[in-house]
Image (cartoon, rainbow, N blue to C red):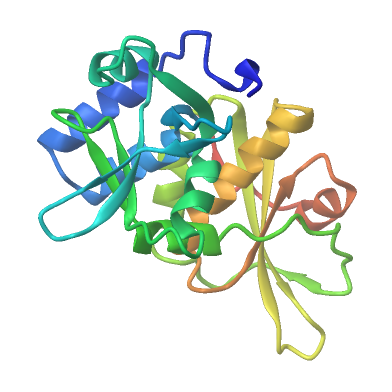
Length: 247
């Protein structure tokens, strides 16, 4: 087996560890959203057992209700403390990788447990399937065959939740919210134009994470989330005031 697949460098997620601790003390929707937002952008360590044929299998744990969870750790310290073998093996994983494993057919997993034990946080399969369902494939740049409109009213909590996401995300300075409507009026899409200092893959990852976070607050209307550097967004938000602006 290629030894390079195993985690060798130290992984630290101090902020995620703190948020997980806070959520265990105060189990609110807001705390869960904070943990979920940071988890989506964080690396994890998944412990594995190496097989004689060179393959490996993930660790899974069960509870007294017969449910099974894949195990993941948020940082090297938690991984080394909890794994009892002299030379524990772990592979680096993104939260998206964990979602794919949990929802894979045939594995019969009920979710993922992060840092099992005193600091554990569990994301159940139902929640993970909901998040995964919001992760639409990368779209081609839309054309403005759709009319751009200013909504007469916005979804409840939309501004509050955009501000919540951007509170600790200083790479976002403005968010524009417009409504795209086909000429026949039968199809509507939200357009969220994000002004950000990020570039390249970092910018796309930020936009994708923001889309996953904000979609549940858009009243079942599919959003297009893109940078204000894109020509079609520039055209759509021209002369519009930002819906959110960092102060």
